Image (cartoon, rainbow, N blue to C red; front, side):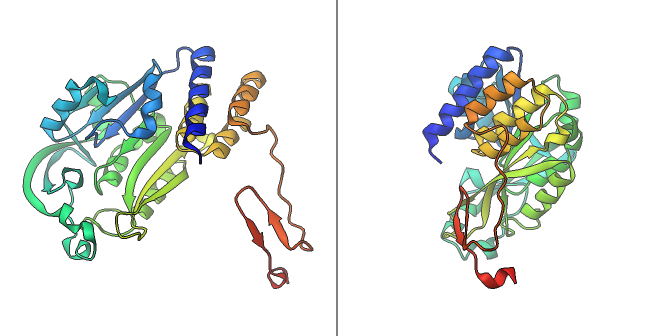
Amino acid sequence: MNSSLIQDKIGNFLSFLKREYVNTSIVMYDVGARYGIHYLYTELVKHPNFSVIGFEPDEEEASKLNENNMSGIRQTFPLALAESEGVRTIYITKHPGCCSLYLPNTKFLSNYLISDLFEIVDTISVKTISLDQFIAKFEVSKPHYLKLDIQGAEYEVLNGGQSALKNNVIGIFLETYLQEIYIDSPLFFDIHNLLTSLGFKLISCQYNPSFGGEIMELDVAFVRDINFLNNEEDILKGVLFCLIHSNFEFAANIVRDSDIDEANKMAILEILDLPLHPQRMLVNSEDLYINSKIELRKIQEDWWK
């Protein structure tokens, strides 16, 4: 999808929020905040009520982020989020972006050109804390969005933050794997099962081509189902999250099924350039083709016998 079109729609929606919902605040927790805010969220930095809290166990990197006004992160905590409170080992790798609470699967990785990045050069012990424990302990705003990029430990953070997921979080963007890049780390399927059980829907899935083009590493986004959005502000945050991840149709469905007043509902759908009542697609078995916005697929007659 055209990136400028996406940015225009996000900009228009943020202007709508500032005009119609002045006090709507959006808080994102960036877990694994090295290098600063993810590029998908840079447009939100312009919104006066958007703030980011970062987590980066590398104390030197956390300090740099706190000193850098251009990072997009309001405050970075030098903490490692995990499933529970304790002391864990972090495996320091040749590429700092590959460090993890899980041991790299060197035997498996040896089949790929990027294996050198995962070479262990050191280990350190760090104190860990769960997401729910952090929220209870520190006087900070609760998260509406989560971004997780912690090399195989994403499931731990989600499992240790179920109270936040049930009560506060609207959208989740994370990196995950289809194979054990890190030994014994939970995979995409574990994360998908957990989040769908908590009322989240998968709305975006992109793969990283670094493994020789093999689909191995995924960037995925989940948003809370409309039935689990508790109020009008949550609905608007869900719509914005869908826009950020280029899923206009799911954003429109959130709006269509909501109790937002008719004028604002139509204003949002106009931004999305989608109708209030989508046309149903009906299959006529006598036709050779089905038309959709996504594809033109030939139907073989014997499929319908």
